[in-house]
Length: 282
Image 1 (cartoon, rainbow, N blue to C red):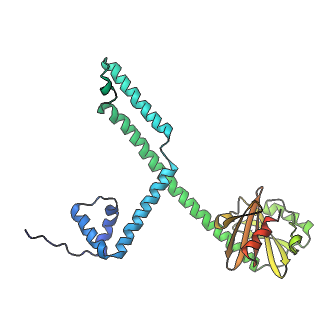
Image 2: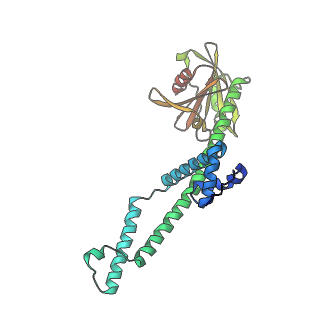
Image 3: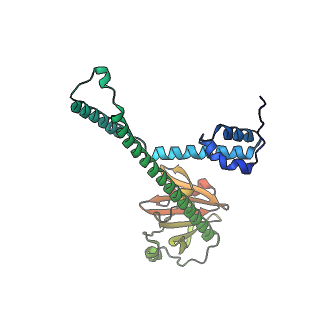
């Protein structure tokens, strides 16, 4: 009997089958067709690997968000035991010990079905929550990126300060929303030049300008709950204090937070020097 060779398939024909291929839902003929195509097509092979990676990531997120707890398993086991006991009482007989451990399908199916429905609901809810959390994280990252770009812009295009006397900084507090006192950086040779209020992503921050050994240093003071720039910076520890550092367009950014007040330094110093400065501001 002569076998019939399967003609090569194009990517356009194969692409709609890749999802079912990854889920092992294809018929034998279609499965063979896809496998033969993947031998020679690196592009479709990469699609299959990407789909598999997405499935693994989603399963991991669902399991992390809604794990089956020991208490849930205990409740299912208790329900099974209670149903078995009720059936034994109704039938008016106690079965042999070996059979007493076995439940009839009449008992197992309703309880198992209820458990399965509960798990399916939990899994569906977890998937929705995972998608929601992912969307929230992406939105937070975009907001933090925008804030960092704005802080760099204000540092690189600094305007004439609104005040030059430290005692006048308190007039900025209603706009900034946090208490303002001038952090002293004299130990590092920094000289205060003046301060202003600058807009950052529909919020406001105090911009305090220093000169330190020929380097311009801008210290921003803001409400840390409304300016979450730390989400896009690298965490380190300076003198047992958590500090976050990064670099945008050649400008070093270092940030920290204390009792709801955020501090961020922008400068052309290196990241270690910026981190040391911001850790010393309070």
